[in-house]
Image 1 (spheres, rainbow, N blue to C red):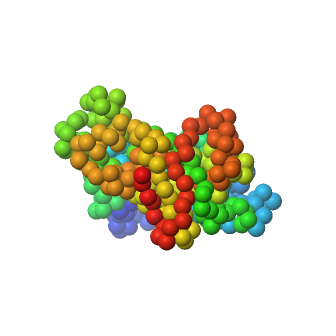
Image 2: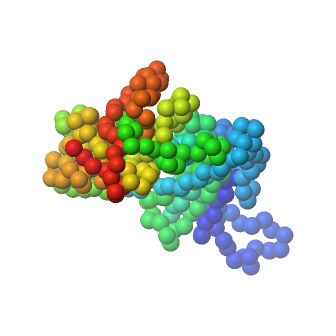
Image 3: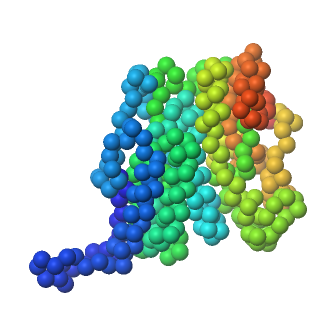
Length: 359
């Protein structure tokens, strides 16, 4: 189901005679046009488990209890944050929509779960059917790439809430995992290696600071080529948020992993402790990798301390797997066979406080 609502669509019923069809307002017309586009796009993601059609009050999804005995549902919600206004300014509506799906997929997958379906919320002061279509197309393409059904959502026109030229985008995803295969971090042990998978760039974190530094302080434009970045500023900032579903699945299937951490808002410093058991900490070797040029340039422009960089940005690391030391070679070989780069960047150590230590 994909619904739409708006504030400007209602009219006084006394304006029409009994038996007349309700008059079509511009807002209703825009919503109807957007809905028709959405219906066709969303159906491209449907599979045999989707039991509902677009346009109802709720979506129906049949859980495969044979594939997932003793099932545990895993749910997450997210938005794009400060990357969204930049994407809108550059007209990259489909790209940022795919970022949203991939972010949610990663949050589901690190728990050992298979993502099932996605719901979206699109809100604007005034619906632009072309922008809606581009956004939903991005959601659809990312959902299909991750094997997820776009089950429904809400498209809302609210001029009293949103700025005239802006819009909001949020996503909600549900996954499932059999209870014995649920990854909570409890299996992580002292001596486990931290196996890192590279990010494409900022992903969806740190955009407020990055834009202030690059546009306000450095005075760059979106289309300006900067040698230190090796790219135009807008392109460097808008690199997509990766989906790590495939490498996560491979590592789980190889039975070499104790847990995962998705490196998002809060960087490595704040995300690793979220999965560490009590009495354990993460020791990071800073010589193990070189962050992409974007991060070094941001640090130089803002004269930012190392501690703040690692608690704000992902520093070129999008996902970290906790691998037993005796299985690290098998884990890396598993990833190499799928052309996935990886770096061992540290170990789990015993400490009273769950934290990240850098050396």
